[in-house]
Image 1 (cartoon, one colour):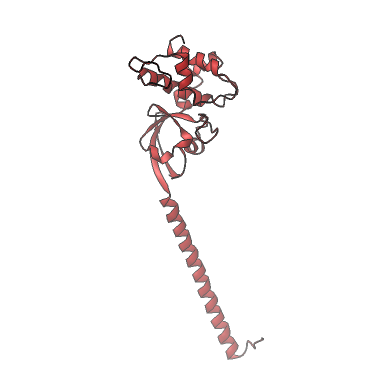
Image 2 (cartoon, rainbow, N blue to C red):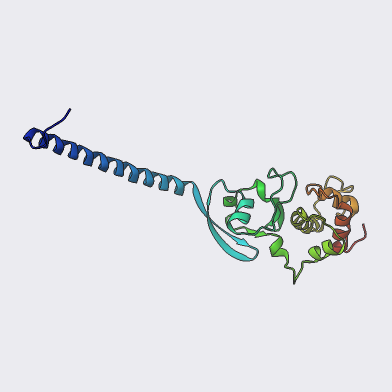
Length: 215
């Protein structure tokens, strides 16, 4: 249908169309603004600010509530010494120390550790100032590819503290006597840390040296 734009009726129709188009534009803009506000509110409700002591330094992050401690370490704090292996808590490559106790970082959420003290391989020692366990792993060649090594070292440090605290394991023979550092105890307590290269005997030697006992 064609209109003579010079006629009053055509001008009136054009005005109505213009007003309708303007109203539609305002509606779309308003809906977009509302959607953006709702998305922002939803995002904020799904995140939490968490503060913890990381390798002796206070760190604060705002994280998605679903973020694992492992991903917070690697992706947000760039502490890539802690490795992601199976991501199911079965290999031990992501073992870190939380308030002195070992834990699989892939199985715990970062927001659960408000106020906790977390130590990773980087916090144990640096190349110019190695932790005794790190130095022993180097001396006894307790690693090959090195992928599991951060978790192995963190786990072995905590494991020796468990023995010193007289916490028994499945192979502890006498529950009334002080726990001993033996080859069997070390192997049992480190069984949650898998070494695909098979450097287990060297790992036991490294831990034994640090423990100061002959297994």
